[in-house]
Length: 203
Image 1 (cartoon, rainbow, N blue to C red):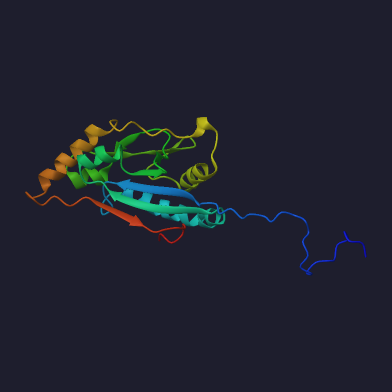
Image 2: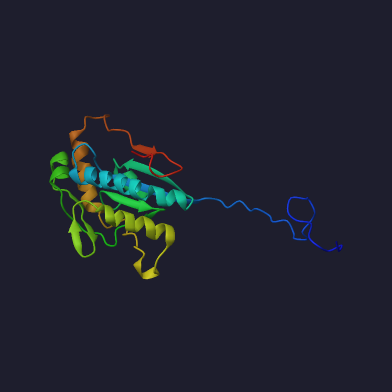
């Protein structure tokens, strides 16, 4: 047998190939935020929360397979100070990595929040494929998630509305709510951070 002939696999001799280096790749992150005025009375906020969670369940397998780590943060906006700090423009709001998923800001009268506050209050209308909805369709949320993860044409990326757009509407809501609250009884601001490192456990 010649000196340079292969001795076969499993014999422990060197093949002459440089050893491969395994490089750990950090998982990609998808931060999902749901901001709202009320979940006890407002049917738009309630329906948006349900559709968001159902959309996350539907895409969970795909995101997990792609190595995407996700978190879902729900924030009950309860003051104008919070509105300004969060850049909150309309209720409800869904953001992916800080980006509002709504292509344009449009609102109309919300009977639930108007009844809750005792003053006329507008809430968000969701626009998807040329149609208007009182809650975001699951398809719209799934589409936004896939765009956030895999990218898309720059022209198709939504631009967040300006923070001052809905300030007067929100100011009226909170002024009316404050008048309903006894002195010293204003509820504490709250943020609920739901799991997770993977989507699908946020039921």
